[in-house]
Length: 380
Image (cartoon, rainbow, N blue to C red):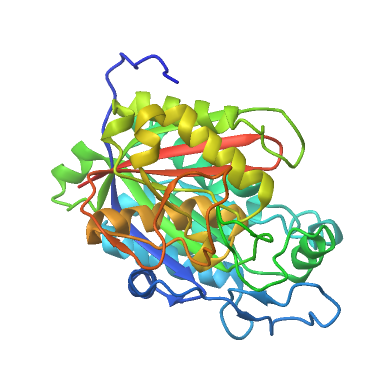
């Protein structure tokens, strides 16, 4: 599958600051170490009572973390790593993605809307404003990243901060468990025979994206480059992807075209890989459709098998994973794998992380309602 090559000149987009928190701990180094170790973060849920639930495990931080505080921390750390001064921060907008809190309808109108989180975060960090907040399920954060990159590439913004977060909560846990979407065997086995569903995970992340020209002008050292982004819908079913992966394949083709990369130039795919029967087989089909002859040789893993599914934050958490893959030259393991499913014939990274120094990686996400996003990253 191919898409037209873009012809308009556009600014190159780079990552100059990044921080991420998962159940492995707070800070990017904790995730870096966990990816190298290749052991999942799932434990028995203690945040709320799961005694009456089929599933009992998730990947969550201890205690009772507060989403706004956790997001504020990762955003502050990302800004600090970027080296921006206060004046530059004050000119920078924030795009925020977060889970739709079930308590909002019961709150006062001025407090009970998603945009309040972005505005509060922007004020805490000294950012200019928070013009958009995304709650569009599992592509919320990746959509925010694509929009931020488009704003920079078109010259409308010099830089944009992006933050996203989800904390495992009782309402979603109960909903997914009742729908038998959660794995009752305690493992998220992406693309594996015998996979039994997803498991939830805490995830907070923030990045600073800016034009390569602006970064060079102020002497900032990029962590990675965001080369291309693509989005597509398949409108097949409210909660199932198209079985042939048509929407995911179109998003991949669009992202590769924007990045000016041929399929065979991609060294690793960080897959959506929820561990559910419908998603994984459709995603495998999309990979073969988009990458053609290169598909059987393309290393693939889903780091949800390690971190859990962080819902609206997953696109940004996995973007951070992709940056670390480019930096470390170590492909994360597809954990929990028990054997090949004939419908998921991919070059999966199993048993242990795989040593490879990639120059181009792709992060793929999909969501209820048939929304699909793909991001192409390049080494700095």
